[in-house]
Image (cartoon, rainbow, N blue to C red):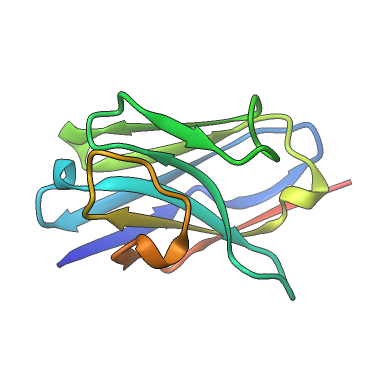
Length: 125
């Protein structure tokens, strides 16, 4: 069992930056690949970024490529999402998730085993 707690969300103006954090507890953090997803009101949850267990492989949705960076610190049981050049369309609840298939990065939400409660990101125009 893994518990995930996100933080770092908030209100920011377009063009600004935020860094989300997700702290894991329970089983060994390095046993999991990690992903970030988001869900805007009235829309389905969508993939944002993922990173494998070592941090050696990552993957991004086209909509955030070049603006967002996912990273992890296994010593701190934490995965990060650095978000730069934010746009109003980035407004959503952001969720981190853990995938027991640790060697790869996957984009389908149903492949992830554990989820955090989410943190709200609001980007004003």
